[in-house]
Length: 443
Ligand SMILES: *[C@@H]1O[C@H](CO)[C@@H](O)[C@H](O)[C@H]1NC(C)=O
Ligand SMILES: *[C@@H]1O[C@H](CO)[C@@H](O)[C@H](O)[C@H]1NC(C)=O
Ligand SMILES: *[C@@H]1O[C@H](CO)[C@@H](O)[C@H](O)[C@H]1NC(C)=O
Ligand SMILES: *[C@@H]1O[C@H](CO)[C@@H](O)[C@H](O)[C@H]1NC(C)=O
Ligand SMILES: *[C@@H]1O[C@H](CO)[C@@H](O)[C@H](O)[C@H]1NC(C)=O
View 1 (cartoon, rainbow, N blue to C red):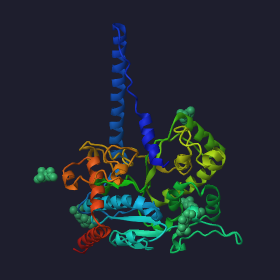
View 2 (view 1 turned 90 degrees about the vertical axis):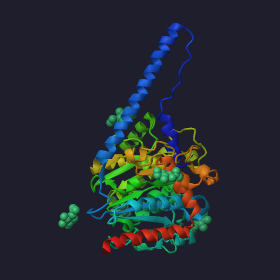
View 3 (view 1 turned 180 degrees about the vertical axis):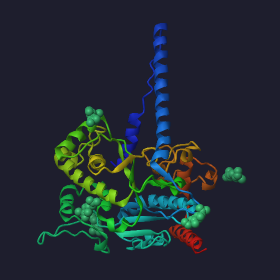
View 4 (view 1 turned 45 degrees about the vertical axis):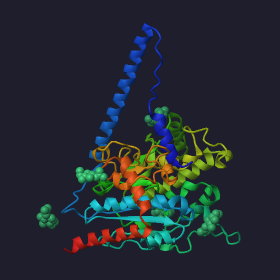
């Protein structure tokens, strides 16, 4: 199960269920009315809390930069792990993410740069046609925005030579100078956790630091997401502020249990809960959190999950209390809790800004609440990634969505447009945006 299932299930989990009892006689009716009023008040109270939370998050966690005129240059990158060997499944997501990245850059300051970095097994022809460059790190602030590919060998493919005991760690066209590999840990991850699919999206952040060290901020994200236009003008409030998105795995049971695991590991645990898989912050903090996340995942794997769980024989029956499928979230949980105290990192839970819903129909929501990033949850409501990949939205013309400013319409339009455009056309658009940014500087 992938962590976004967790997000969805858990967010359902936290919704108060409106189970209104049937009222038969008068006494009961009064009690019922009281119950209904109380339920209503608690709902209103909760939506108030949420409302103030999102105001607080946009005002306190973010720095707004002017889109035009004298803004200093900000260098950012969006980072994904993409399994190019499963192209038919994941390429549609890469295309819509790419499309939304272009949409964001149309309104971004000319001085800013946001690259799109893809770590993947090989430099497929689709990636070449998208205009992605191979093995090129950013060298200066003025170079146009680029899509960059760095070949990366997945943990599951890092075989160990039985004679020399040496592990293959680089993809065939991968370059060693772009990686900082902790060899012992890489071997241990391969031996213990090669079947756990969600290790690579954390491991790229731990290992590929030289490829993203240049940037002021990175956005580490899954592929099934959309960058909104709001992302064009907001960065974390300081250069040392690290935002984490919305995750939905915390129950009282696993908060206590993870606290106990932290004690076993001699790590701090200030009870920060529901930490998402999307991170937006400075590269150094991201790498440090990724390093600690991998260590925590190994620890959890060995001491807190049984063989039947490793082999995924238990399914989802322990969810949401304790579930092997969200091991990477538990790992991140332990790392973030520990480093928040030990390294005094300024980590903020931006659960109203990142990993936001693609089903929201409110036309004012994206702008009013500064949603920076949308993440597909497990849903059949539009926009649903399942329905999209099934072709169920193919009859909708993206033009009909132009004037709808809701998150739902934005996601739908980006996805539909990315489907109607060829990879070459998307690449050409990137080229045009780059020319436009550079022309401005030369003026
Ligand atoms: C823009 O920046 C330059 C140099 O930093 C400064 O001299 C100028 O006054 C600024 N212009 C505006 C409109 O803020
Ligand atoms: C990685 O492993 C998979 C499954 O074992 C295999 O199909 C694939 O060819 C391997 N890829 C590389 C680059 O070695
Ligand atoms: C952390 O949360 C758990 C579960 O809600 C609770 O039992 C524990 O007392 C909390 N610990 C701290 C330090 O707040
Ligand atoms: C993360 O681990 C790598 C490999 O061991 C190491 O080179 C790097 O310095 C670590 N990064 C941080 C920020 O601790
Ligand atoms: C969108 O709004 C503009 C201006 O209000 C209008 O001219 C245009 O026809 C609308 N487009 C659609 C597809 O509704």
